[in-house]
Each structure stands twice: as C-alpha cells, then as structure tokens.
Image (cartoon, rainbow, N blue to C red; front, side, top):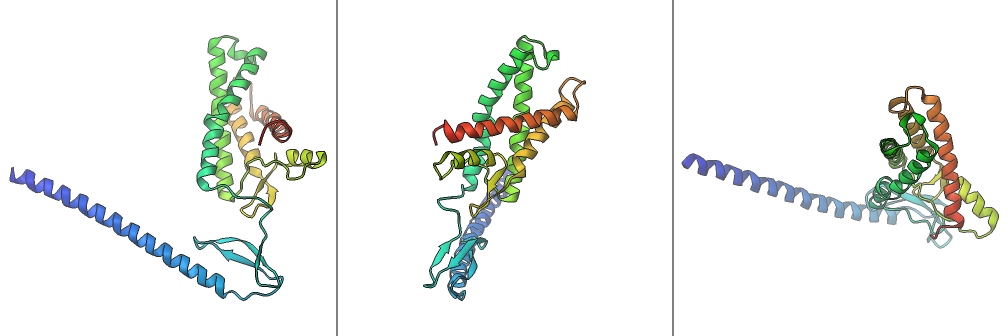
Length: 246
C-alpha cells in the first residue's frame, strides 16, 4: 500500500512539474514576444528616413515584413499590390484541405464519371468495380497534386489562390485568367511564376501511370495527362474569371 502511495505521489509530482514547465515556457514566450515587439518598434522608429528611400519594415515577429517607400513627409507608402491581403497560414491550410476533400472531391467525381463513360482506361472495365478503381485513382492523384503544390507554396512563400482581375476590360480579364494558371502572389502581392501547381500536376500523373495504372502506361503518359490537366486548369480559371461569383 505504501509503495502504491509513493508511486501515485511520484506521478502527481511529475504531472505538476510538467504543468509548471509548460506554464513557464508560455510565460517566457509571452515575455519574449513583448520584448521583440518593443525592439521592433524601436528599430522601425530609429531607421533614418529620406525621401524616395525604400526600406524593409520589420514585422512583429521579427521577420522582414514588406517593402516600404518613404515619401517627402516621412510617411510610408506601401509597396504591397493594391488591395492584396495575404491569407493567413490557417487560411492557406484550410484551402489545402478544401482542395483535397471538398472541391477536390467534386472534381474527382466528375472526372471519374467521364472516364467511366469513355471506358478509360479500358482495362478497368465499365462496371461498378471499374468505377471504384477510377474514383480511387483520381482521389489519390488529387491528394498527391494538392500536397506537392501546398508544400512548395509554403516553402516558396507563394499564394496561388485565384484572384479576379481588378480591371474590368475584356483583355485584362482574359490575361488574368490565363496567367493565373502559371503565377502566384508573393507576400507583398507581386505576381511571379509559380512552379508549385505545375510540379504537383505532373508529379501526381507520373506517379499514377508508373504505379497503379495498367502496365502499358509509362511516365510519358503521365506527362501527357499532366499537360491536359494544366489545360483544364486554364479553362477553369476562365470560368472563375467570367462565370463563377467571387
């Protein structure tokens, strides 16, 4: 009985110590955050200002936030693209999940129906079992594509979300729809080339054709499928620009 009491006491002490350590870490993290915010404010205030000077503003997390252009009054003029607000990490992650399990499933279902009607590939037959194989294949490809794209976008700090054109003329909207398939936004809102979606598309199709597709398929078929998929993405962006609501 005494041994049991000692054991319980050790467990309780260990638990209390764990709580104490975690609480201490939280307090220290809070103090560090406040100290960093204070230091950042001082640094931003002490930076000399000259007309036309382009500086890097330090964010509250100590990371260089975005370019700031100083005017003749010393006021900052944001170099961030008009109206662009970068999604938070949580919003970007939720969009990744949405691409796999919400909107992604709609695409998986639609493409599986088309493939079933066209009996593509013919080795998977045109019955219930064949349809399930097509659904499983498309679902797996979508998971791979979205995961590769998301990983690269987070690494490169890119935002590939589709944004409608700010300009309302037909030419600008066509240009925006086309370029959005190959570009993304940097943290400042600047549009740059985006390799993540292209890499995700080709990676998924090549893995599929080399792994679970019938033996007659190879990586070359994966490249062809990937190219067709990019063409589909371009068409989808035109629908987003001209048809779908914001």
